Structure formats: C-alpha cells, structure tokens
Image (cartoon, rainbow, N blue to C red; front, top):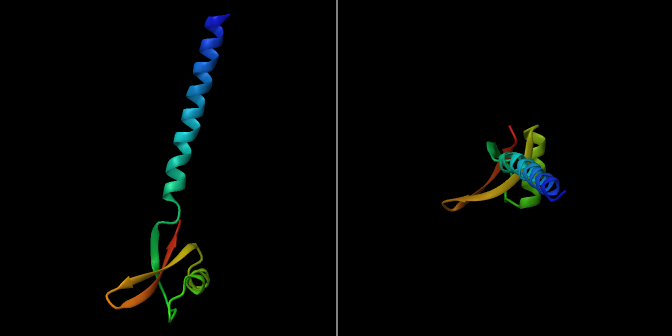
Length: 79
C-alpha cells in the first residue's frame, strides 16, 4: 500500500513539474518581438499602446523608450 502511494505521489509530482515547465517558455515568449515605432508626440504610455494597436495588428504592448533626448513609442508583439 505504501509503495503504491509513493509511486502515485511521485507520478503526480512529475506531472505537475512537467506542466509548469511547458508553460514557462510560452509566458516568457509573449510580447517581446519589436514591431516598429508609432507616431505619438509627446509619448504617453496609454496613448502609445492605443496607437500601436491601430498600426500593428499583432501588437500587445506599447512602451515609451528614451533614445538620447527623444522619447519614442515602441510597439511589441507576440509574433
């Protein structure tokens, strides 16, 4: 009985680790590909995200990033 219970616990633990490890790469890979810049002046986060969705179909994130003295709206997507 104890041997069966140990093997069930080990199998369950192995399945949980397997499920967790397969989800981690998917979550890390989302929304990192640079799609391009969007025309937002002055750059505000909310406006940047909205304009990115208009200009790039697969856009999931818009961030204001500073290059030198200027701030640009960069759009990122999943693909």
